[in-house]
Length: 312
Length: 278
Image 1 (cartoon, rainbow over the protein chains, first blue to last red):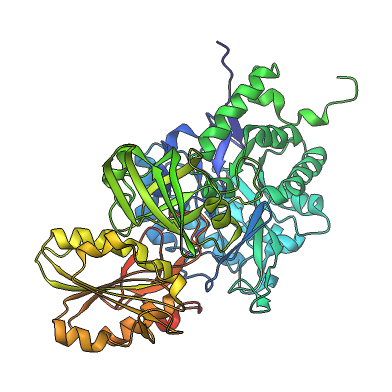
Image 2 (image 1 turned 90 degrees about the vertical axis):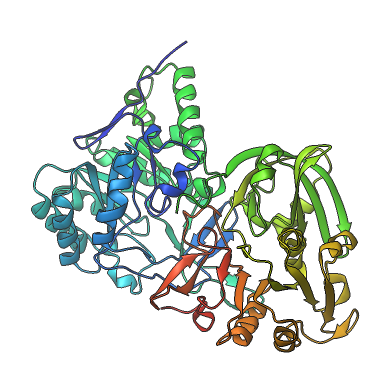
């Protein structure tokens, strides 16, 4: 029976497996824990948390689309204090590895969130979500503006010190993703999360109006997978030393391997969990079998394998 | 929170039978020993479209009844209206087809500890889970009266055997093709005082639930309603199926109809704020 080393790293954070939840797709973690042990996957990326409790956008918040879905949740959440008091202790009790995702409306809010998290023990990394498409004002999507992206990451880096890895979550809805990625890495990001959902819209032809309460929503699921693979491939080609948490429509071990070959050090699973509560564990097992079948002896060997020179 | 779906599991389950009943399909599905954990008000989330489907989300259906000791082992009954792509696919599944189901999910109807007078109100296929509920209430010693309504006769779901647990059943259609002409909510106010109703259980369109809430507001009648909001996951992780609900202190929060519901206290739901930004 072959075994394989599935461990991976994002910055200085080590994980025994390369599989993660995608932020906003696992709620507090308790809901998925009914179906598998959270400690058995790489880690839980928590729902992006803001300073204050937030109700999010009006319903309908969801529209299924071919091989995907639109969502417009709008960062509903308990606020950072309740999150630290209730959700972190639960995840630690489950022995899950935790990546805390934060979102802010201003550069200062991100720094304040980082300050709140600085003293919390048991966190593996911080994901700085600068690309949520479901905020009231699209002008606040920092990840569409290279300068704003830098300022957010710089503020978090200064606050958090040099210890905890920072993962910047970027949007594919930009003209030059590599330039934005380069900017946040220079500002202190240790890793990148690619990609957030793609902005979309569905019009209900009965009402002849946008289907979602928030009108626009983020498209996720297999429909966006090729966009995600392209994004990961381009950024890895430009900065092969920067670890990437790849996501966008992964629903099988084959999809995960594609993302890893494009340059991802780990994969996040979101929409697939909506359709299948045990998707993360199936993907992890299928990925392991596929890597073994293809002759890899570790996950790390497969990272960026699609970039190898001709003839190898 | 994690106690809500504590008996839920993802299983492969075979279709035992699929029959057309009016505009609906009655599906009996073998869920083995999980049937013993299903309570009236619980629902099931089913994968649709087969292996290479472009439908990535599960579909949620209320469990109308369960049988723990049928010839096939434990089974559940679903009453499905073939409206969308997913429900049409499900209604086309033959006997023997194997489905990927997650069951049982959500918060069930609360059953009174005392044998009180109860009124069950169902709209369209929303009446299906009320018959299983009626049996449980009847066994508790409650007197059960039932009102069913729909736009037209073929959308009334009222199986013969379901009526056994019910003291009285009145049917309303908006076009007068079955029972009385009118809306199911019309006689409620009168029935509450005539029958000394303590609890109303309702299941159906949101407008019907809101109308019942208006009638019970300010009275001592408890209104337990099964709400309907579009869901992506059914297990509490996607945050799409929310609606505004007040707690006892009056604080309003967006609660998930899948995990904090589908059965909710009607007087806590902020009906005028559903679909609006808080």
